[in-house]
Image 1 (cartoon, rainbow, N blue to C red):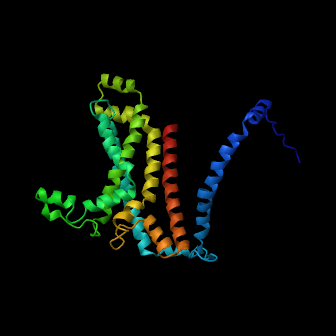
Image 2 (cartoon, one colour):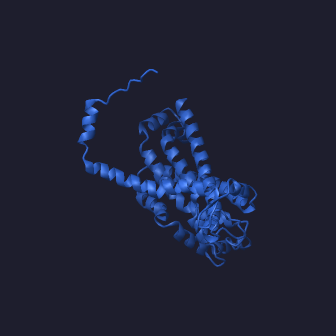
Image 3 (cartoon, rainbow, N blue to C red):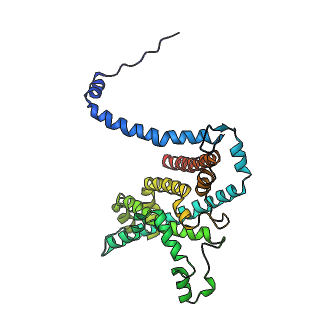
Length: 304
């Protein structure tokens, strides 16, 4: 057997490591321990619980893949999964398009632009629960939405938006996008500040239209921001809970049920924690698939 030679650490590196004060290691170790205890351990534990039957008391009973087999035949779960796809597309698409459009419109300095930016970002200051309660009032039969429809002669469109299975999910989606679009706008504003204005000016001198300048000059410089926006939007769409629960509780008749609300019901209403953990694993897998797929595609585009 041949011995493998290991490269000794350079004296300079060892000296620098020794010169680091112990208090620095303490400040690094404390948040690391907290992160392990409060984030990684519960996450790993939920993977284990997804293969068990447990009501929160006593020992968990291993059941193998039974929870996942039951999910495959659960109509409510399939409906929630379908709603999550609709939610991810609608929430992500409308938030990104709206935020990007607002960022482009408010990027250049002009009178009152700071006031407009603050007003659009203001909904992000409120929690999702408060936002849900606010919009729940707007959707009441005598609320603002129906009042405005009646004022413009569209009484035929008035309805109980949150009590109608055909409109409940989309009504909540509008409220969520209203809150999220300001956050996406701020991210894109930060990205636009990092673009090179000389390239845009040069393309304008060459006769490029506004759309051509955006498509071929500005958009390629926003790749880093696009990655952040995509990751944040996908994660937010899959973990959305507060606003749906505050407005509809997943109803009526599970028409606005998402995976997060169904997981909450199974775990904390029916105390079926093993089954709820299986739903949590599905949510984690979906987020991982979306993000990894996008990152691989973005990496290939940058390599080209």
